[in-house]
Length: 242
Image (cartoon, rainbow, N blue to C red):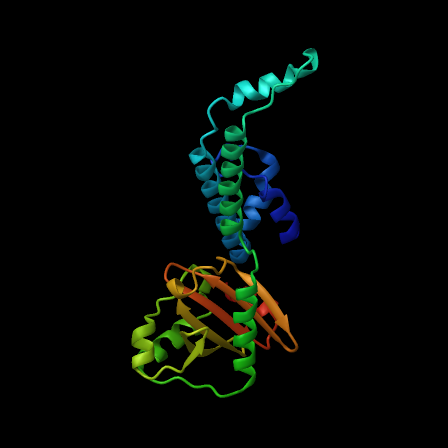
C-alpha cells in the first residue's frame, strides 16, 4: 500500500474514534504508525476533522428552518408555494459562510499565494549562496536539526529573538524577520528559515511543498513559528525530515 492509498482510506476515518474497530482501516493505520510523514499528515487530518466538527456544532440553524423545509416539501400538493422568509435565507447563508471560512482556514496543506511567495523568496535567497550563522543559539539549533532522528514538523526549539541577537543570519520578508540556520543531514545541505507564527497568520499549517528549478521547499507552522526548509536534495529528502 502506498502512502497515497493509505491517505485515501484514512480520509474517511472519523476523528471521534468510532472506526477504531473497523478492520478495513487496519493496514492504513499501521502504515501511519510506521511512517513518520504519513503519521504527521494523519494527525493533522484528524485535528482538522475534529475542528470542523466543533465548528459545525457552533452553527445554529435559523428559527423556523425545519418548518420552512417541510413546507417546501408539501408545496407540490398546494396551488400556492410557501417559501422560507428572507431572514431565514440570510441566516442559512451566514451559517454556510462560517462553515466555508473554517474549512478554508483549517484544510491541511492548502497552498496560498502568500505561502508560494514565501517559498519563492526562501528558494531565491538560498540560491544566492550568502549564508552563515554565528552564536551559541544558532549552533545548538543547527546541531539539533542535524540529528538523524529529529522530525522538524513536531516543532522547533527556536527563540527567534535570541537567535537574531546572537548573530544568526536574518533576512526580511514582507516586513518581518526570518532567521536562517543551515544544517546537514544524510550528506545534504538544508536551509531552514524561521519566522514568528504571529507575523504570518494567513499561512496554512501545511506542510505545503514547492519545487522551482533545482530547488525544493516545504513550509509549515508549529506552535510558535512558520518554517520553510529549502534544499537541492529534492522533495523526498525534505519530506524525510518531517
